[in-house]
Image: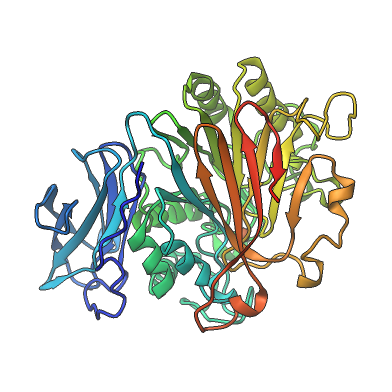
Length: 484
Ligand SMILES: [Fe+2]
């Protein structure tokens, strides 16, 4: 496959918009469809919006239409454009109230034999912690899509988490108007607008799209006395997520897990380990960690995955999800799969019983970079050999925050001795921000962490990332290996 460069005009951030101030976005590409998104800046409605999609710079229109939006959906516009051609880069734009939006660009998924794919993986973009240089860097890559694993926004008020920039509203978001205002503020960022205009996003939420350490029935950062009913807040947060994010609507409240296919090379499973079926964290009052009935995905999502994963005929099975799956006993995190060992065992059982191979788990949430072999007991020297991958079941690659901080920078290069203490760990960087770039063919997945230091993240001047570490995963071997 050749990558067609985005046509000029996709990154026209200099152009002044009054009606389309929040830019454009696209998402969830299939071989024949893609979601396109914008918002009309008005306070009276309803408003009619024209949309156009083209593969040749609007010489010919591949699809077009009119749609009406209003205050019931915060004047956001989301269209599932169908009837498109596979593996094709399209441009799209909107017109309303006498103004035309900037041009966005999105590539449909391939349908037939596919030789190469390229994805960026991102998560955790706390606006107050710095500037979105890493989103800008992703915008400048040639990609099939961006996989965003959540913490796209954070719920906190100013001064509560990060102090480089301030957000609107200034207090913690709780109400419908609060959540809408927070997304709107994030979406004014020119670097975030640039990455949305450049690529389709495939997103899932993590906790901060609602509130910290959420589970299906509550959250660490939800105080019922002050903030009201948790389920009402969850429904509000999910509604605004669907209004503002270019995700295909399932029609089912709270359901975002789904599969996307990439032409026999990749089947992509986007999971919800956060809200859909998660039991409460053990250290926050949940049932005992080792309770075999404890759920991270929930029975319904687990059953869906048990049907979908073994049915895949793609070379690679990518599992995009939120919290770290590998065992990390030095920092046992009750919010991650370490806090739900029975659920992790059931996931491993599923892969082994159905001989599902070439599975790569992609993870966000933890604001640090990791490459793991996934195995039942990494300390069992008879069952697992880190040199060959014997005894491993899958691998896991963890992307750090776009801006959200990890541990202090003095620990960035392995001062914690984690590599020596964890046989299944191939690489860790606990401090730098970044994103993960995946180059995929039928033989190999190459992962490259693009990193920035703290000084770059807090600088308003343009910055470029550095690739310090590349890893590869070879088909047929559940082992991640650092490249020279
Ligand atoms: Fe985060």
